[in-house]
Length: 239
Image (cartoon, rainbow, N blue to C red):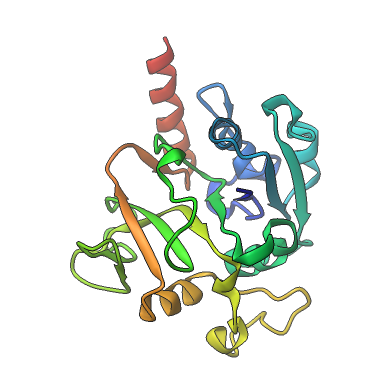
């Protein structure tokens, strides 16, 4: 299985830290956020990892090299000066991720930290996507998707959980993506720019998405304060 790490965001809420450092390269627990993912992917047996980049893109290859430090092969997918959003970024990276017969791949947000065990992810999801969900954090109290008792997902409901930014996807998620996205801004750009959420909701509507609830630790490192809290917590554990 191959993997994609989303690392192209501008990190606007993290300024001034991200004025000189891309958010996934900010350090917590003594290493860059993205390094936590790379270690777990290597332990899982993943060998090829695509890192999509935009803001301060040149820093990733300088910091991570070719991935040999982790026993990985890193491939950098530069999106230009304007990030392509999650859907456009994944679509742009598909040539580096997709294999024969709709082979699934793993994708992770580069600006999260969690203790989720990637080995729990299905290597062959039943549908087009399998999402990891977590309890709703204070900054996102209403959640994203509802996890049904049978493992399927619903697009909305009172018991919605938050998408953790960890999932397994099949390239077929992008079949007829233009019809699903519609005339959203950026769709006609080259390469196209669009969000992943509409494709996920379309997959949910046709019963082609599953999920699971991770009840362990998870942090969306979206502000300097949350980064400082995470770093302090990890430092306390290692002392």
